[in-house]
Length: 132
Image (cartoon, rainbow, N blue to C red; front, top):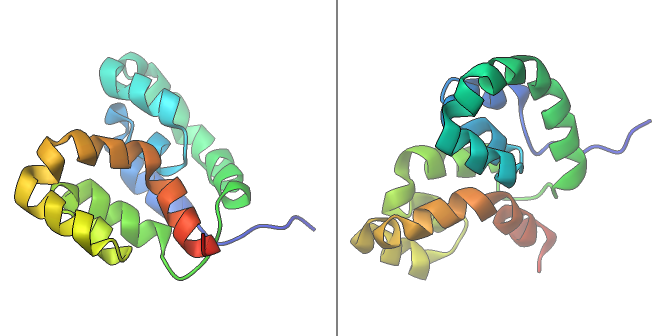
């Protein structure tokens, strides 16, 4: 039997897929490079976005094997990042109060930090969950 954690959700992937032409679901599953490509090309001109409708279950299985389960929930962190990220709420949820407050007063550190968190949020949560 496969050793899988419970870190990412297919349902969340499909919800983010709705915004997927901007790469949200790809960032969620830890596919930063293709997420950036989707962001700048509108999901590879919507063709890649439509193909991803069928690829989400395999992306979820890969993320389950890759990231560490623990006290910080990936789904909550991603919801907070996606919708309230410029206010630093996701950072406060992860216990990063200083940078969360900094994000709050600087608009996600002038949006650069907010974008950086899209690229690194899974790794940040894994690091917290593994106790490093």
